Amino acid sequence: MAAKNDTALEIGGESFTSRLMVGTGKYKTNQEMVDAIAASGAQIVTVAVRRVDLDRSKDEAILHHLDPKKLFLLANTAGCYTTEDAIRYARLGREAGFNDFIKLEVIGDQDTLLPDTVGLIEATKTLAAEGFKVMAYTNDDLLTALKLEDAGCAAVMPLASPIGSGLGLLNPYNIRTIKSRLSLPVIVDAGVGTASDACITMEQGVDGILMNTAIAEADDPVAMGRAMGLAVEAGRCAYLAGRMPRREIAIPSSPTRGMLG
Amino acid sequence: MTDLITIQINGDDRAVSAHMTLLELVKSLDLDERGVVVELNREIIRKPRLSETRIKGGDRVELVHFVGGG
Image (cartoon, rainbow over all chains, first blue to last red; front, side, top):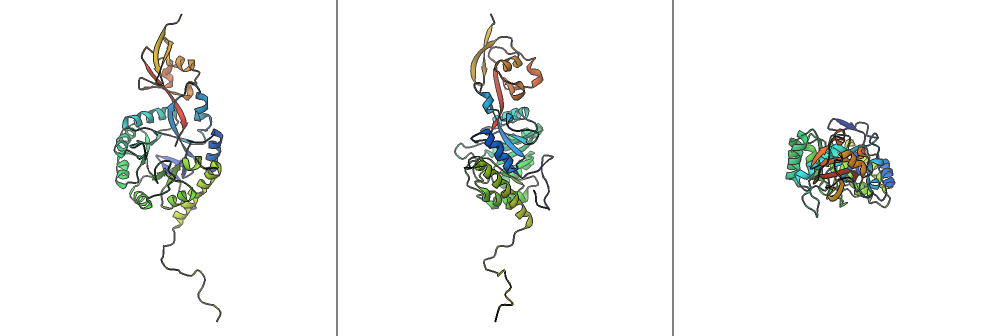
């Protein structure tokens, strides 16, 4: 349920019901994944493109567990370290999937999984020209975000902190700056660890959050899925409500007049 | 006896019957063609073309699908 004065999330001409997007990796079982997604209320779910394991293909195929009529499947290019690979995976993902959307990752460094922003911009130009709706995973860097917008992205996805780190939103200022300067949707992708991180991130005014590990690696992923759904909604409502100013002095909440003499 | 040729499937060399179509190859691996995307020598072969595209020795075939990911 969105706040009263909220509008639907629109990306690339599609309208979405939830501002939370979730990944489908790292779950112990497929059933746990399905239940956690349902508890989160997420509509957009990401999937990866990989070789079929010819010895035991039936276990891995995720489409047996996700209903594309109910969920919007967003293919990613995770694991790609070059522009060429990312473009190849994006094309395969479009062929395997149900839409023109791609979560574009061009990874630049194995230890941090930080994006290769130069390769990312190049890949975005190529894919946008091929009709892809590119959602680009990027640094929390304003200049890169602006260049991605120029390159033809459908949404820009700056990180909160490195993928799978659970460190939360490390630079709220950068995220707010990106949001204030872009006309495209800004979806924070990666780094959220728990519900408060999601809430604080949404309070910056961004359009949505994508997360995977925070839910999948929780002790109880279904309960964490629900927590994240509530946190994203709470953060969005709080942003729209407009917070009180911070003050370094106390101001009483109860009347100072009418005290007993 | 069927002639055999060697092709690469998902990075591994495999001996398969010569003159097979890609659709026959996919089915011979016990896969449902609706759930896989076929790339032949780096070119995506769309579903309608699987039954009209024949493999030849040295071809590199990639069979991919969606798995869990973030």
